Image (tube, rainbow, N blue to C red; front, top):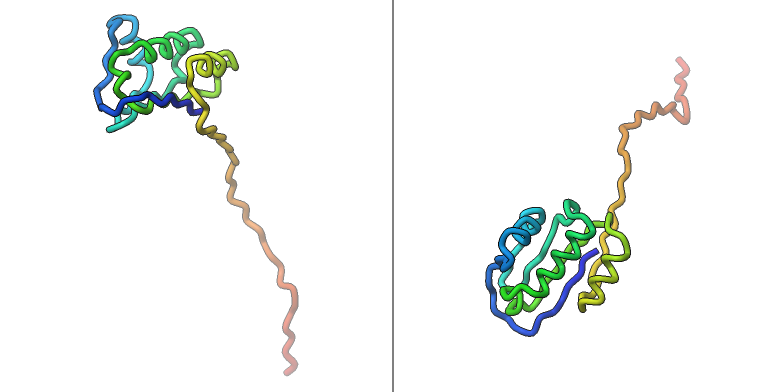
Length: 122
């Protein structure tokens, strides 16, 4: 699921962690995409539930995020409902849900028999 939080400013700044060591480890486990008026956190599947909560808390407290109008977090489906509730409690809203469907593709050879025969009389 994708979560977003609208922030009330519109400056673009690169995000760097204030709690250097511990937070930097969390940011190194995810992909951070910086845009002109947004930041998107992706690839959260490498985080534990506790690390995800810590990352969310860091994002909320991070001074560099204050001037970014849209903060998006792509939450991997492995996380329990606890993360959904945690995000909502911190004023994040679900804005998109991605469903992935897999189908095994097989090449199937179908031999067809003619539906009619044409006979010639000589």
